[in-house]
Image (cartoon, rainbow, N blue to C red; front, side, top):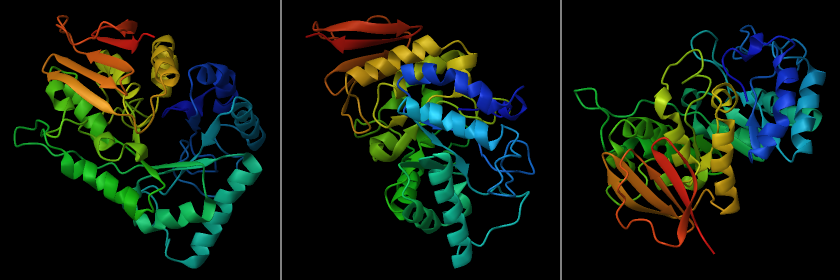
Length: 346
Protein backbone atom coordinates (compact mmCIF):
# COMPACT_ATOMS: atom_id res chain seq x y z
CA UNK A 1 0.00 0.00 0.00
CA UNK A 2 2.82 2.47 -0.72
CA UNK A 3 5.94 3.23 -2.74
CA UNK A 4 9.25 4.95 -2.02
CA UNK A 5 7.82 8.44 -2.64
CA UNK A 6 4.55 8.07 -0.70
CA UNK A 7 5.86 10.13 2.23
CA UNK A 8 5.79 13.26 0.05
CA UNK A 9 2.13 12.98 -0.93
CA UNK A 10 0.24 16.25 -0.47
CA UNK A 11 -2.31 16.06 2.38
CA UNK A 12 -0.58 12.90 3.61
CA UNK A 13 -0.43 9.30 2.44
CA UNK A 14 -3.01 8.01 4.90
CA UNK A 15 -5.55 10.57 3.66
CA UNK A 16 -4.81 9.58 0.07
CA UNK A 17 -4.96 5.83 0.61
CA UNK A 18 -8.26 5.90 2.49
CA UNK A 19 -10.03 6.95 -0.73
CA UNK A 20 -8.74 3.82 -2.47
CA UNK A 21 -9.99 1.28 0.09
CA UNK A 22 -13.10 0.34 -1.98
CA UNK A 23 -10.96 -0.42 -5.05
CA UNK A 24 -8.68 -2.67 -3.01
CA UNK A 25 -11.64 -4.46 -1.44
CA UNK A 26 -13.29 -4.99 -4.83
CA UNK A 27 -10.06 -6.58 -6.07
CA UNK A 28 -10.18 -9.17 -3.29
CA UNK A 29 -7.22 -7.76 -1.34
CA UNK A 30 -7.16 -9.23 2.19
CA UNK A 31 -4.09 -7.55 3.73
CA UNK A 32 -2.49 -4.18 3.03
CA UNK A 33 1.21 -3.56 3.73
CA UNK A 34 1.58 -0.06 5.15
CA UNK A 35 4.86 1.86 5.48
CA UNK A 36 6.61 2.29 8.85
CA UNK A 37 4.28 4.30 11.08
CA UNK A 38 6.57 5.74 13.79
CA UNK A 39 8.70 8.88 14.02
CA UNK A 40 11.81 8.41 11.90
CA UNK A 41 15.02 10.23 11.05
CA UNK A 42 14.48 9.29 7.40
CA UNK A 43 11.21 10.44 5.78
CA UNK A 44 10.50 6.97 4.38
CA UNK A 45 10.27 5.67 7.97
CA UNK A 46 13.10 3.15 7.94
CA UNK A 47 15.15 4.89 10.66
CA UNK A 48 12.66 4.73 13.55
CA UNK A 49 13.27 6.78 16.67
CA UNK A 50 10.31 7.36 18.99
CA UNK A 51 8.33 4.18 18.40
CA UNK A 52 5.11 5.35 20.07
CA UNK A 53 5.17 8.71 18.29
CA UNK A 54 2.81 8.21 15.35
CA UNK A 55 2.13 11.93 15.02
CA UNK A 56 5.49 12.85 13.49
CA UNK A 57 5.35 10.38 10.61
CA UNK A 58 5.66 11.88 7.14
CA UNK A 59 2.74 9.69 6.04
CA UNK A 60 0.21 11.35 8.35
CA UNK A 61 -0.74 11.51 12.00
CA UNK A 62 -2.08 8.95 14.46
CA UNK A 63 -5.76 9.83 14.00
CA UNK A 64 -5.46 9.61 10.22
CA UNK A 65 -3.77 6.23 10.59
CA UNK A 66 -6.55 4.97 12.87
CA UNK A 67 -9.16 6.15 10.36
CA UNK A 68 -7.35 4.33 7.56
CA UNK A 69 -7.06 1.08 9.51
CA UNK A 70 -10.75 1.32 10.47
CA UNK A 71 -11.66 1.80 6.81
CA UNK A 72 -9.75 -1.37 5.95
CA UNK A 73 -11.40 -3.26 8.80
CA UNK A 74 -14.85 -2.11 7.69
CA UNK A 75 -14.09 -3.88 4.39
CA UNK A 76 -12.85 -6.99 6.27
CA UNK A 77 -9.27 -6.09 5.40
CA UNK A 78 -6.26 -5.72 7.67
CA UNK A 79 -3.15 -3.58 7.73
CA UNK A 80 0.40 -4.79 8.17
CA UNK A 81 2.93 -2.19 9.26
CA UNK A 82 6.60 -2.45 8.47
CA UNK A 83 8.91 -3.41 11.34
CA UNK A 84 12.62 -4.03 11.52
CA UNK A 85 15.95 -2.26 11.69
CA UNK A 86 17.86 -0.72 8.81
CA UNK A 87 21.47 -1.72 8.18
CA UNK A 88 24.54 0.57 7.81
CA UNK A 89 23.07 3.96 8.75
CA UNK A 90 21.95 2.86 12.24
CA UNK A 91 23.50 0.99 15.18
CA UNK A 92 22.59 -2.61 15.92
CA UNK A 93 19.87 -3.46 18.41
CA UNK A 94 20.59 -6.16 20.99
CA UNK A 95 17.59 -8.40 20.42
CA UNK A 96 19.03 -10.96 22.84
CA UNK A 97 18.43 -8.51 25.68
CA UNK A 98 15.20 -9.47 27.52
CA UNK A 99 14.37 -5.81 28.10
CA UNK A 100 14.65 -5.04 24.39
CA UNK A 101 12.45 -8.03 23.57
CA UNK A 102 9.82 -6.95 26.08
CA UNK A 103 9.75 -3.30 25.07
CA UNK A 104 9.55 -4.05 21.35
CA UNK A 105 6.89 -6.71 21.95
CA UNK A 106 4.90 -4.25 24.08
CA UNK A 107 5.08 -1.67 21.28
CA UNK A 108 3.99 -4.18 18.65
CA UNK A 109 1.07 -5.30 20.81
CA UNK A 110 0.18 -1.63 21.35
CA UNK A 111 -0.01 -1.21 17.58
CA UNK A 112 -2.46 -4.11 17.54
CA UNK A 113 -4.71 -2.99 20.39
CA UNK A 114 -4.52 0.80 20.02
CA UNK A 115 -4.20 1.28 16.26
CA UNK A 116 -5.79 -1.92 14.98
CA UNK A 117 -2.99 -3.63 13.08
CA UNK A 118 -3.07 -7.39 12.66
CA UNK A 119 0.35 -8.26 11.30
CA UNK A 120 3.93 -7.40 10.56
CA UNK A 121 6.54 -7.26 7.84
CA UNK A 122 9.98 -8.08 9.24
CA UNK A 123 12.56 -6.04 7.34
CA UNK A 124 16.03 -7.28 6.39
CA UNK A 125 15.74 -10.54 8.35
CA UNK A 126 19.24 -11.65 7.42
CA UNK A 127 20.36 -8.95 9.87
CA UNK A 128 19.31 -11.01 12.90
CA UNK A 129 18.75 -14.63 13.82
CA UNK A 130 15.44 -16.27 12.81
CA UNK A 131 15.11 -17.23 16.47
CA UNK A 132 14.53 -13.51 17.16
CA UNK A 133 11.69 -13.43 14.65
CA UNK A 134 10.25 -16.47 16.41
CA UNK A 135 10.29 -14.62 19.74
CA UNK A 136 8.36 -11.64 18.37
CA UNK A 137 5.91 -13.94 16.58
CA UNK A 138 5.21 -15.77 19.84
CA UNK A 139 5.00 -12.56 21.88
CA UNK A 140 2.57 -10.78 19.54
CA UNK A 141 0.55 -13.56 17.81
CA UNK A 142 -0.08 -11.68 14.54
CA UNK A 143 -2.80 -12.72 12.13
CA UNK A 144 -0.21 -12.54 9.35
CA UNK A 145 3.51 -11.82 9.13
CA UNK A 146 6.09 -11.87 6.36
CA UNK A 147 9.87 -11.59 6.36
CA UNK A 148 12.20 -10.08 3.78
CA UNK A 149 15.11 -12.46 3.17
CA UNK A 150 16.61 -10.93 0.04
CA UNK A 151 19.75 -12.66 -1.17
CA UNK A 152 20.95 -12.86 -4.80
CA UNK A 153 20.02 -15.85 -6.92
CA UNK A 154 22.84 -18.00 -8.28
CA UNK A 155 24.24 -17.14 -11.71
CA UNK A 156 26.85 -18.54 -14.07
CA UNK A 157 30.10 -16.89 -15.10
CA UNK A 158 28.27 -15.32 -18.04
CA UNK A 159 25.96 -13.53 -15.62
CA UNK A 160 22.88 -15.47 -16.72
CA UNK A 161 20.62 -16.91 -14.06
CA UNK A 162 21.23 -20.57 -13.26
CA UNK A 163 18.36 -22.92 -14.05
CA UNK A 164 18.56 -24.66 -10.67
CA UNK A 165 17.74 -22.32 -7.79
CA UNK A 166 17.13 -24.99 -5.14
CA UNK A 167 19.75 -23.48 -2.84
CA UNK A 168 18.02 -20.11 -2.92
CA UNK A 169 14.52 -21.38 -2.25
CA UNK A 170 15.72 -23.84 0.38
CA UNK A 171 17.28 -20.91 2.23
CA UNK A 172 13.86 -19.23 2.34
CA UNK A 173 12.22 -22.42 3.57
CA UNK A 174 14.90 -22.93 6.22
CA UNK A 175 14.44 -19.39 7.51
CA UNK A 176 10.68 -19.91 7.88
CA UNK A 177 11.21 -23.17 9.74
CA UNK A 178 13.88 -21.70 12.02
CA UNK A 179 11.57 -18.77 12.77
CA UNK A 180 8.92 -21.15 14.08
CA UNK A 181 7.04 -22.08 10.91
CA UNK A 182 4.16 -19.58 11.18
CA UNK A 183 5.78 -16.59 9.51
CA UNK A 184 5.80 -16.32 5.72
CA UNK A 185 8.61 -15.11 3.45
CA UNK A 186 8.66 -13.07 0.27
CA UNK A 187 9.34 -15.52 -2.55
CA UNK A 188 12.35 -13.82 -4.09
CA UNK A 189 13.19 -17.08 -5.86
CA UNK A 190 9.97 -16.99 -7.88
CA UNK A 191 10.43 -13.29 -8.68
CA UNK A 192 13.95 -13.81 -9.98
CA UNK A 193 13.10 -16.85 -12.07
CA UNK A 194 9.86 -15.36 -13.38
CA UNK A 195 11.35 -12.10 -14.59
CA UNK A 196 14.01 -14.05 -16.48
CA UNK A 197 11.48 -16.56 -17.82
CA UNK A 198 9.13 -14.00 -19.39
CA UNK A 199 11.97 -12.83 -21.63
CA UNK A 200 11.88 -15.85 -23.92
CA UNK A 201 12.94 -18.46 -21.37
CA UNK A 202 9.63 -19.85 -20.11
CA UNK A 203 11.22 -23.29 -19.77
CA UNK A 204 12.55 -21.98 -16.47
CA UNK A 205 9.08 -22.24 -14.92
CA UNK A 206 9.28 -26.00 -14.37
CA UNK A 207 11.83 -27.56 -12.04
CA UNK A 208 13.37 -31.03 -12.64
CA UNK A 209 10.51 -32.58 -10.64
CA UNK A 210 7.82 -30.95 -12.77
CA UNK A 211 6.89 -28.40 -10.10
CA UNK A 212 7.11 -24.60 -9.91
CA UNK A 213 10.78 -23.69 -9.39
CA UNK A 214 10.39 -21.07 -6.66
CA UNK A 215 9.51 -21.34 -3.00
CA UNK A 216 5.94 -22.05 -4.11
CA UNK A 217 7.21 -25.41 -5.36
CA UNK A 218 8.36 -26.57 -1.91
CA UNK A 219 6.54 -24.55 0.79
CA UNK A 220 3.74 -22.64 -0.96
CA UNK A 221 1.68 -21.97 2.17
CA UNK A 222 4.50 -19.78 3.51
CA UNK A 223 5.51 -18.14 0.21
CA UNK A 224 4.40 -14.57 -0.56
CA UNK A 225 4.75 -14.05 -4.29
CA UNK A 226 5.21 -10.58 -5.78
CA UNK A 227 6.24 -8.79 -8.96
CA UNK A 228 7.75 -5.63 -7.48
CA UNK A 229 7.70 -3.56 -4.30
CA UNK A 230 8.90 -0.14 -3.09
CA UNK A 231 12.53 -1.32 -3.26
CA UNK A 232 12.73 -3.45 -6.40
CA UNK A 233 10.56 -1.10 -8.44
CA UNK A 234 9.22 2.39 -7.67
CA UNK A 235 11.92 5.10 -7.60
CA UNK A 236 14.89 2.96 -6.44
CA UNK A 237 14.43 0.39 -9.25
CA UNK A 238 16.96 -1.91 -7.61
CA UNK A 239 15.66 -5.07 -9.32
CA UNK A 240 12.59 -4.20 -11.42
CA UNK A 241 10.45 -6.65 -13.32
CA UNK A 242 10.59 -5.99 -17.09
CA UNK A 243 7.99 -3.24 -17.48
CA UNK A 244 6.45 -4.61 -20.68
CA UNK A 245 6.04 -8.06 -19.10
CA UNK A 246 4.42 -7.11 -15.78
CA UNK A 247 1.01 -8.41 -16.91
CA UNK A 248 2.54 -11.83 -17.52
CA UNK A 249 3.93 -11.76 -14.01
CA UNK A 250 0.51 -11.17 -12.48
CA UNK A 251 -1.07 -13.79 -14.73
CA UNK A 252 1.39 -16.23 -13.15
CA UNK A 253 1.28 -15.35 -9.45
CA UNK A 254 -2.50 -14.74 -9.32
CA UNK A 255 -3.23 -18.18 -10.76
CA UNK A 256 -0.58 -20.17 -8.91
CA UNK A 257 -0.18 -21.35 -5.31
CA UNK A 258 1.44 -19.16 -2.70
CA UNK A 259 0.10 -15.91 -1.26
CA UNK A 260 0.17 -13.35 -4.10
CA UNK A 261 0.70 -9.66 -3.40
CA UNK A 262 0.06 -6.68 -5.67
CA UNK A 263 2.25 -3.56 -5.89
CA UNK A 264 0.49 -0.22 -5.37
CA UNK A 265 2.16 1.39 -8.40
CA UNK A 266 1.03 -1.35 -10.76
CA UNK A 267 -2.55 -1.35 -9.49
CA UNK A 268 -3.17 2.39 -9.38
CA UNK A 269 -0.44 4.23 -11.31
CA UNK A 270 0.09 1.88 -14.25
CA UNK A 271 -3.60 1.57 -15.16
CA UNK A 272 -3.68 -2.15 -14.36
CA UNK A 273 -6.50 -2.10 -11.80
CA UNK A 274 -9.10 -3.77 -14.02
CA UNK A 275 -6.66 -6.35 -15.39
CA UNK A 276 -5.39 -7.37 -11.95
CA UNK A 277 -8.91 -7.39 -10.50
CA UNK A 278 -10.11 -9.81 -13.21
CA UNK A 279 -7.25 -12.20 -12.42
CA UNK A 280 -7.89 -11.88 -8.69
CA UNK A 281 -11.59 -12.63 -9.11
CA UNK A 282 -10.79 -15.74 -11.16
CA UNK A 283 -8.54 -16.89 -8.33
CA UNK A 284 -11.22 -16.19 -5.74
CA UNK A 285 -14.22 -17.78 -7.41
CA UNK A 286 -12.27 -20.94 -8.22
CA UNK A 287 -10.93 -21.27 -4.69
CA UNK A 288 -7.27 -21.17 -5.73
CA UNK A 289 -5.34 -21.31 -2.46
CA UNK A 290 -1.73 -21.11 -1.23
CA UNK A 291 -1.52 -24.90 -1.48
CA UNK A 292 -3.31 -25.45 -4.79
CA UNK A 293 -2.09 -28.25 -7.06
CA UNK A 294 -0.19 -27.30 -10.22
CA UNK A 295 0.02 -29.51 -13.31
CA UNK A 296 2.51 -28.00 -15.77
CA UNK A 297 1.35 -28.95 -19.27
CA UNK A 298 3.99 -27.10 -21.32
CA UNK A 299 7.20 -25.21 -20.56
CA UNK A 300 9.07 -24.17 -23.69
CA UNK A 301 10.95 -21.00 -24.51
CA UNK A 302 7.84 -19.32 -25.93
CA UNK A 303 5.03 -21.15 -24.13
CA UNK A 304 4.07 -22.02 -20.56
CA UNK A 305 0.76 -23.73 -19.78
CA UNK A 306 -0.38 -24.96 -16.38
CA UNK A 307 -3.61 -26.30 -14.90
CA UNK A 308 -4.32 -25.39 -11.29
CA UNK A 309 -6.59 -27.55 -9.12
CA UNK A 310 -8.19 -28.92 -12.31
CA UNK A 311 -10.25 -25.70 -12.34
CA UNK A 312 -8.30 -23.11 -14.29
CA UNK A 313 -5.62 -23.12 -16.98
CA UNK A 314 -3.14 -20.30 -17.57
CA UNK A 315 -1.12 -19.79 -20.74
CA UNK A 316 1.87 -17.44 -20.84
CA UNK A 317 4.00 -16.66 -23.87
CA UNK A 318 3.65 -15.49 -27.48
CA UNK A 319 3.00 -18.91 -29.01
CA UNK A 320 -0.58 -19.14 -30.28
CA UNK A 321 -0.79 -22.76 -31.44
CA UNK A 322 -1.69 -24.75 -28.33
CA UNK A 323 -2.67 -27.91 -30.15
CA UNK A 324 -4.93 -30.03 -27.95
CA UNK A 325 -3.64 -28.69 -24.63
CA UNK A 326 -6.89 -26.93 -23.67
CA UNK A 327 -9.74 -29.40 -22.93
CA UNK A 328 -13.09 -28.63 -24.60
CA UNK A 329 -14.81 -28.04 -21.25
CA UNK A 330 -12.68 -24.95 -20.54
CA UNK A 331 -13.50 -21.45 -21.79
CA UNK A 332 -11.49 -18.22 -21.79
CA UNK A 333 -12.13 -16.14 -18.65
CA UNK A 334 -9.68 -13.31 -19.37
CA UNK A 335 -6.75 -12.58 -21.65
CA UNK A 336 -4.10 -9.98 -22.39
CA UNK A 337 -0.92 -9.55 -24.39
CA UNK A 338 0.75 -13.00 -24.49
CA UNK A 339 -1.43 -14.55 -21.77
CA UNK A 340 -4.85 -16.09 -21.26
CA UNK A 341 -6.74 -17.83 -18.46
CA UNK A 342 -9.42 -20.47 -18.94
CA UNK A 343 -12.03 -21.68 -16.45
CA UNK A 344 -13.74 -25.04 -16.38
CA UNK A 345 -17.36 -24.80 -17.50
CA UNK A 346 -20.08 -26.59 -15.58
